[in-house]
Length: 276
Image (cartoon, rainbow, N blue to C red):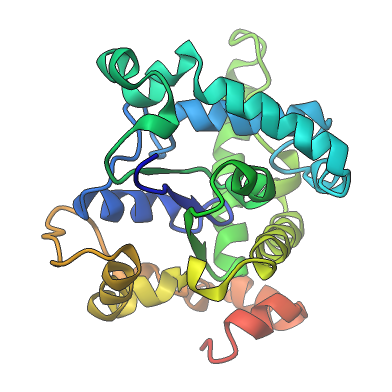
């Protein structure tokens, strides 16, 4: 790529979709074929394949994180990814005309990138192919993440109990996240994996944002984003919801407040020492 890509990562339900919409306002191409969560399906499928190769899933990442310690396997994965970046499936990212013109994602000549929460796990492999990539890591308070995951899984569970087996598939994406404890510990695992991945990189290569700061002080955080992206003017973000009431939502729920008081997490202490 003539422009090194921007890779967005962070735990599921942490504001990565909001970041994609903001990046698009800044003029970055984030993929032709996106799913409802603004994830470029091309890169999403590659991340899924990498985790599956190790016998891992998005909510069971340990097998893949163990694989990252094997240099030979990592090199094989990066070689495979390199071939896929030049394959016909890149039409999902570039669209058909873009593929006919550039043939390889790395030939795309304009500012671009992609997001997928699983980038948090697979980032060390991607950095082998894009060593100059700019990285944006977004973190959201782990209790709100776990609560959001639980709501999603409970809704899927309800639908499954109503319709299964007529749909032919089990609808839950993560039974682990039906419980607050499971979702929160998964949040910790993602934060740890993300921090490990960027610890070996130059500090200037990664911008870290808190979801809550983006909602509460958008002008300040958007300026940080603008400077990091090296964009001259601030875009018009009309139409993008920046609802400050979504920040620290757990404060308004007695159950979640009790859960917050009970848990002890070094990652909460690190990212939210001033959290209300």
